[in-house]
Length: 406
Image 1 (cartoon, rainbow, N blue to C red):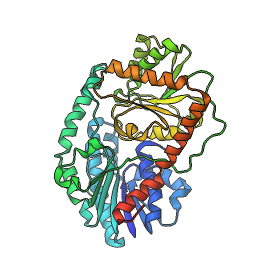
Image 2: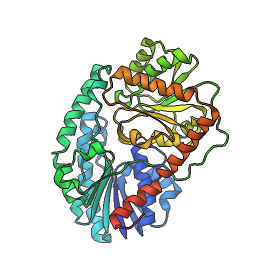
Image 3: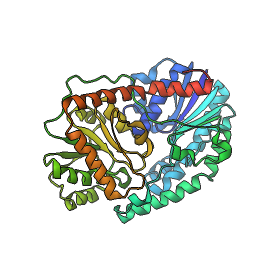
Image 4: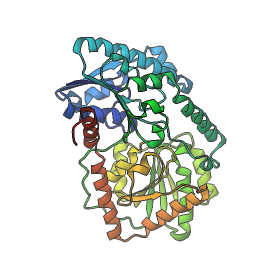
């Protein structure tokens, strides 16, 4: 079988959406004779420098828009236009190669957003889209402490979510698709009822199925917590900072390291100052993925209270190193984490102050655990990382498409 993957974002060892495109390409090889990946020309040098891109049966096609469009891409308002134009050009490239090679099936892998849909269904062959997201929203009661600009951005996104269900690109893609995968149940609700029977909830992120427990991992001398991610309002780092301030009342030596950067850094620093956690919160700046993963064993837990992440790759990366995770029962992290590998904080019918206290209680619980208890969570994290592997994700999708048992 010869398959085509439309993967706008596709780069090795980058994490996030580029990692999704790359891993889906790598693991599709177990279920097809030939895998052709259509991605941005901007990714070509990085892809071809990686020996794994030259695996037998794996081929890459590259396409990009003219230089004027690449310059305008830096403007946030132009990004939706850019991706729409890229999709049209990518479809024409796919059609040309389909006439020559005759693909048996086409998958739209990235962008994994419901907003943009896909044009690959126009090829006239079995078409699979996803897992896609965009249906998760920040609960209104958890927006009140955000800066005005953050609240405005979330409101605009709410309007975009409403329009997605009726957008021409998404509706065309859903109508043409043989199967639709969505990352969360909230995204499932955006698909019109007439197409919902074709939809399945499936996490979009996974890990290599080779995570092994680090026998040298030992709890730090005092509770050290980590947040890793962009500094954006919806990522919830401000909740972790406020929670640490409450933890310090019980465990004064506990610290929180924030690895990342972004437009809300000054706001987060102000939050730390306001709640009296300036001396126990460290802003570590942007840390490379390799360096971050290498440091995970030195922390007590990852605190990732994101308010609307449909994925949560950093959660799986923490698990791969045996690090427990504290998260909210929202989006992808709320699905990934369970009691065997961390603590999921409930949010239903709770205000922001209550949720901050619940996060703090979870941090104290892990901070006061014995070595044996933490060791059990560490083993559970490794097991969960191996369970949610790219190999299994690819096998699950192949099983549904080919109607075979896993």
